[in-house]
Structure formats: structure tokens, C-alpha cells
Length: 199
Image (cartoon, rainbow, N blue to C red; front, side, top):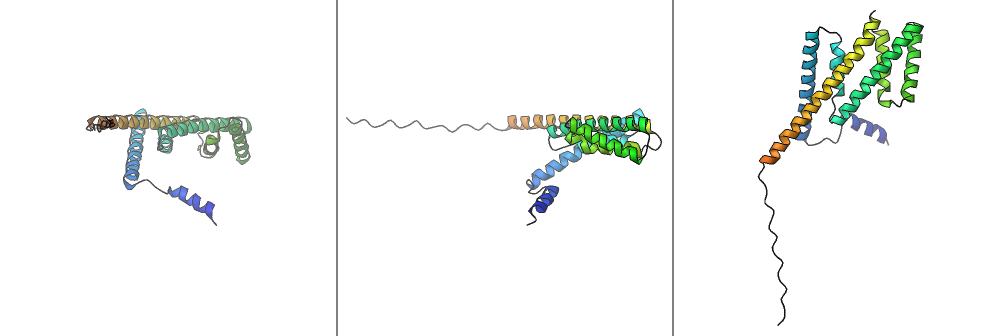
């Protein structure tokens, strides 16, 4: 009874967890990567005097995953989702106007596009992108349509590059540790005893 609910709760809190040391190490690595991405994007956007730095940081933090392959997949999905959502929202507003009915039409079109292109990972983010573009543009619809997807792309790329460098650094450190470890001599195998030959 309540097995599905129990499994859902365990998935939320990720149990069973690895050892305490491994868990803390993963948390420290993620914190370092997230802080580095946030710093790079903040300073970069400030230097370029660009807008939407918040979306770039959000995307970078979302893209960071325990494995590089997962991060790359999440990055590609977010980029495609924002392109689809922003493009559909722009076309709907351009030809049908802006309003609740138009938003519903945009969501229906996005669901259809993602289904036809099998972009299951991008579906929800694409719908959210259309909602943000159409409802939270604050009178700057054209700018939001371009700047937010661009910020998502930049944040995603920065996150993947940071994690790639972190993985490379980890490989180098582990390689050096392996080289510095004393080589364990293989145990000598005793020669098999010669069978006794009867005279």
C-alpha cells in the first residue's frame, strides 16, 4: 500500500545516498561549479553591459548535472526549448496579437511541435518560455524574445564548459595520484612441485 507514493518521496530525497564522504564531495563540486558559473556570467554580462543575466545564471545552474553527459543533454534541451517557445510566441503575437487566447494557442502549437519533433525533454521548458515571453515582457516583447533565449544559450554553454574543465581536472588529478602510488609488486607464484617419479 502506498508503494508508488513512497517511491516518489524517495526519489525526491534521493535515497539511498552514497557514503557521507562521497555525498559531501559531490555537493562541494556542484557548489564550486555553480559559484564559478555565476561569477563568470555576472562579470561577463556586467562588462558587456548586457541584459537578462539572471536567466543566464538560472540556465547554468539548471544545466549542471552530476555527469557531463547529462549536463550536455540538459543544455541542448534547454536551448531548443527556448528557441521553440520564443519563436512560437513571437509568431503568435505577430500575427494573432497578445492575450490569453493567443497564449493558449501558442501552448497548443508548442506541444504539437515538440511531439512531432520528439523533443520530450524540451516540452515543459518551451511552454514556460512562451508564457514568460508573452506575459512578462513588460512592453519589450521583441527584446525579450531575443535576449532571453540568448541568455539561456550563453548560460548553458558556460555551464557545460565549466563542467568539462572540472572533469578534465579531475582526470588529471586522479592520473597523477595513480602514478604517484607505489607500484605493488605482483606476488611471486611458486613453481609447481615436480611430481615424484617412482624409481
